[in-house]
Image (cartoon, rainbow, N blue to C red; front, top):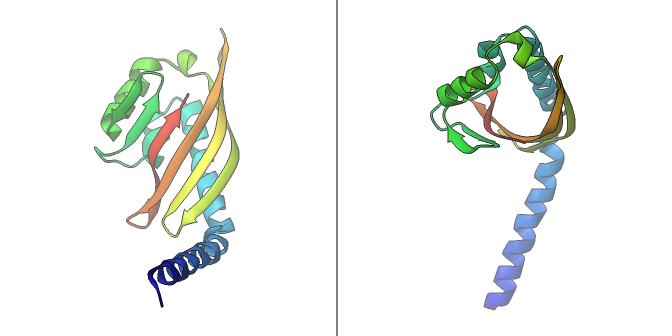
Length: 148
């Protein structure tokens, strides 16, 4: 076997594995779990409970949050930023998520794309998010959030 044949054989084998795994990992159970976690986040937010809202985030200094002010790192930093931006229930308003796509990309990782809407007395804000969820110590948590 020559070099090109070996590389082609390895590439086909690798791609075949990806196709098989995609079918295996697109789990309705995982989608249901993530949907329930995001519903709990909405409820916590709408009850003025930012700590409860943050319970689905990875409680780690490695948590990544990308928002209008750029990248920030860490669970505590993210919570502190939420508390500064939304100091009262009036500022918090009522949050609604609309998940557009949810895909389990591996046994321990999932990707969610959606739209958020924040209904407040003085205005209504909206934008989009992409969330990287990972299973850490047996629980699904958000390890990266890009909201704009």
